[in-house]
Image (cartoon, rainbow over all chains, first blue to last red; front, side, top):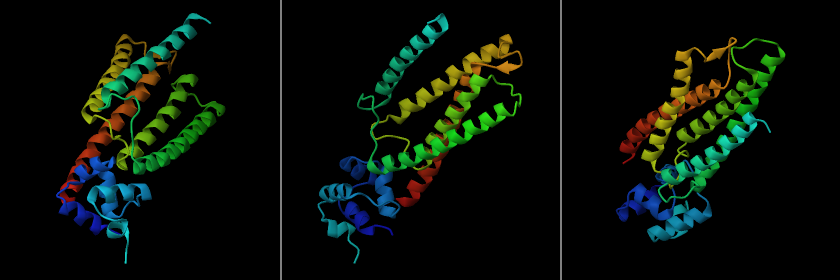
Length: 64
Length: 176
């Protein structure tokens, strides 16, 4: 399932996938895979992404 | 230890030093070790598994050929290169297509230069021996088989890199 919350949070900060990837210490393809729902990140990477984007785990990774 | 064995050991030591220097040159941070993120590490784990299977399959096939007394135009010891290189090719290919080939600290341009130089350096001895007529001795290829297999591997890897780059650019444009 696509992670549109992550994509919109990234876009809200005007960050490209490459910029977010550098800030999180991962490759651009990994961010792309998470957004497309092709890869389930570990909790550590989820926390890193949340910190960079200023969001909580619920905001970005919890499905209602 | 005879001259050939000593030469082989010294050659390996020199090769190890060259490899360290190449890695230091090819990585952006000057480190020898390439860094990968968690997704890449997981994919590379699978890639090593497939490379292992490939090598086992290739070595078994070679063993069967040797036991069947089927004459091949390659020296028996040189056949071992094929299994090793086949495994390495599968490893690289799988990683390329799954976006786990390039590490976080790799300088792509420098790696491309190294691959091209590697291809040229492997063409050179094979071409020289082919021209002098010493490539095949007693109807069999010996040590030059190593150059040929490495050449094939590097060419395949480089072509895969180019194709993957073209495919990724198209996908990126659509994604944005």
